[in-house]
Image (cartoon, rainbow, N blue to C red; front, top):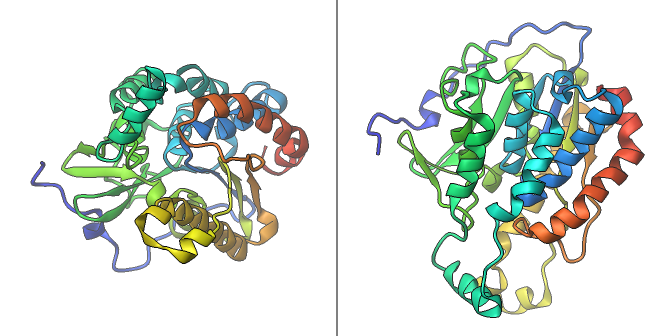
Amino acid sequence: MNADAQPRSRGALTRRRVQQPWPREREFKILSIDGGGIKGIYPATVLALLEEQYLGGQSIADHFDLITGTSTGGIIALGLSMRMRARDMANLYLDHGQQIFPVPRFGALGRLWASSRKLAYHRYDRAVLANLLTQTFGDATFGQAQSRLCIPSCDGRFGDVYIFKTPHHPDFVRDGAQPMTTVALATAAAPTFFQPLATGGYRFVDGGIWANNPIMVGVVDALSAFDVDRHRVRVLSLGCGDEPYTVSDRMMRWGGMVSWKDAIDGAISFQSQNAIGQAKLLLGAERVMRLVPDTQSPPIALDNYARASQLLPQAASSAVAIHGPTIAQTFL
């Protein structure tokens, strides 16, 4: 463990950040991409279709002033920032998702063993994802991103919220030298699925714990780092599924850890609702556009490659068929 590592909060400002100039007549456009594991197929495919149908295959990242993404959304954001085609990012999930989230072998016995093992140990080997990300990003550093980025994670050593930020403001000097792969693994270290990422004296855990929908991370960064009027900010927010979280009769009657074992799903759902609500109140509801796949029954698990690869590409195609013209007119 690096003894020289310091909590990110130790560098917190004690004054208002000096805002950088922004042209008065120019809107500030933000792309925000939720976390959701293999369900990243949906936002990646939406972006791929927009590039293909409205931009002649050119990068959609060129049309946004800042991109924020959490977990799987962070991986997509990183790829876009390097001007990778969104179709290539979608294929990353479609071609390799089953390797990242493998189905247990040996039938029912294998599933029973996997279910028992996950009670005490992380479910998947991060090496598969790490190798894939290394092949994707090579030795590129975070500071080489061609887009302004905010990528949420959190540090379990010091108990700090952690946002990786490209050096798009003079105050942002901490993260530029980080390898792209490190940032991707840090934002996507989902508890129980992957082991926390120990690097540089920190223990990074998935940013979805506190900002699975990172829309307000992007909005706050834009308004604090740049002298832009909030009524000139627009956001395209892409989710991976907004399934409502309900409290069952059993949860009411019994309580306890068994009944509330999925409470983290509730935290994620309510965090997303609150973040979208805050953004709409701050910017104006008409300046926030949110796309999510139609609610599936049952909801697609974030590691269910079979259902995600079967259902989400068509859901993305339907969304672009309906909303594509509005997105093109507003953002592209």
